[in-house]
Image 1 (spheres, one colour):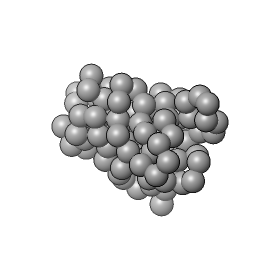
Image 2 (cartoon, helix red, strand yellow):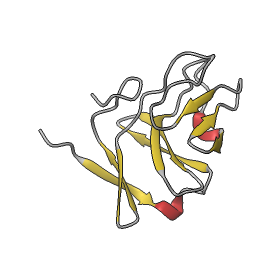
Image 3 (tube, helix red, strand yellow):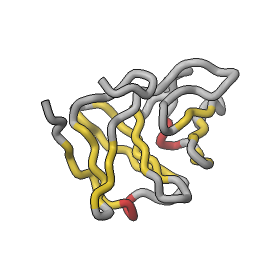
Image 4 (tube, one colour):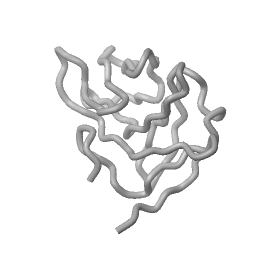
Length: 113
């Protein structure tokens, strides 16, 4: 079965080293843009205490939770050591500057369902 994709905006709609928050099927999703214009998407909830990752600081390919400074890898959703846990990833693709998210297929710890 082929995944359905939904356009949520253009790369320019997400600030470099920042995030934009969207809702998919009632689930808050944080869409991140790195300084190199890579785009990642995670469920907008830190695995530690549920903090809003979309309000965190993006550095390289990770985001720091604004509540307790946990660092989360944007590609896998995994907490960086020594912390443990993960934020589910959301499949994302960029086509001609447009950001598309998969309507289904949120992964657990970086593995698409």
